[in-house]
Length: 453
Image 1 (cartoon, rainbow, N blue to C red):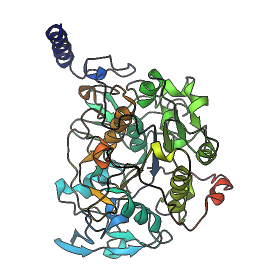
Image 2 (image 1 turned 90 degrees about the vertical axis):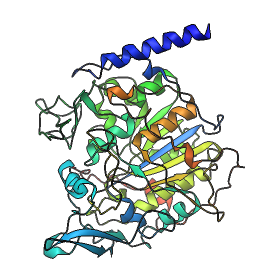
Image 3 (image 1 turned 120 degrees about the vertical axis):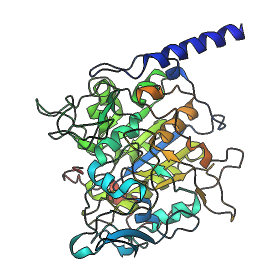
Image 4 (image 1 turned 60 degrees about the horizontal axis):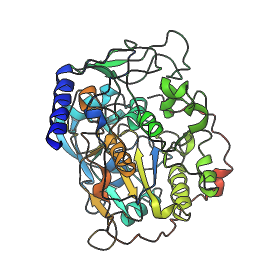
């Protein structure tokens, strides 16, 4: 009987492999044997709440240059007067750092075929991109990384900015055909199902040629997301965003037809984002949560606000001091590199990327402990699909879809490397921050445009 079942599975895989990646625009990928893989982990049910906090536009070195044990040197390389020179990273602050270009094209330029030496120099060759944030301003991030896990090999699914980063963070995919993926942003805001008629998304093809407005209306049916998987398994989820309607590129599910026009839209897309704090306090935290900031709490360059680290701290402390702590994993990422220098050449498994490295902090009572009894630096190569895979493992879920249809959750390394489920759960000590949680609970809406890249 076992042999017969194995043969059937092999036949299904062969059929799926022969069919190729042929999803057409406007059609969901068809089921396959690969899509039916069920992921499990050694957590044995210890993680029942996964919270993904998504901040904005920072490279690993822009936040963690000089962090002990991490691949984050305090210097880089740039071209100056026709020569490749070593540049010492200079300190900047939330108040003074510029909003650097961070489109697909700019990422490819920064990459320079893996040499990582064509980052934005700025006017008068002041090496604007070669900078790190004042450690005093981001002290909570350093404290979290020193106490829990800093992953120094986290790469976005795709080159470019926030639009595709937020979509791939919930889908692990943004292919609309076998040879074309979303890129940069559509032709009209709010870049989703509520965009004006005639709006077109932009696509990059397998030869890495970037188009503008050469794709479908940005209300996607061409790929599935984690929402379908969670719904099918009756695993609760919420996505927190500042505005329920016209949330812009921070609100990827507004661009997903299945969610925007389904029951999830009113039940699981939650605004404003500060409701995550009251949901924790009122014991209404979902099993899986994504949390995005408002404009001023986002860490976004050029906003001239230092509130981001405190915003993140308020969420971490709320979970840590709640009944959810013993069963939680908190993953903090920054959606794209924001144009800032980074030394690590991203691996290139497909034509979309991987993109330029971003910071990732993992917090849990089961977070791995380093040799000194403090934090742990994970050098495992992660991508956004790694977060999705860890969610699937934690709840015994199937993959969103097969790799040959562009899905990355099966191919990615799971975040489970950052955990030790055999250790006794670690007690939580609150982190200190400049602004208290009460500031954010009472914070009025920013009413500011979100990132437009």
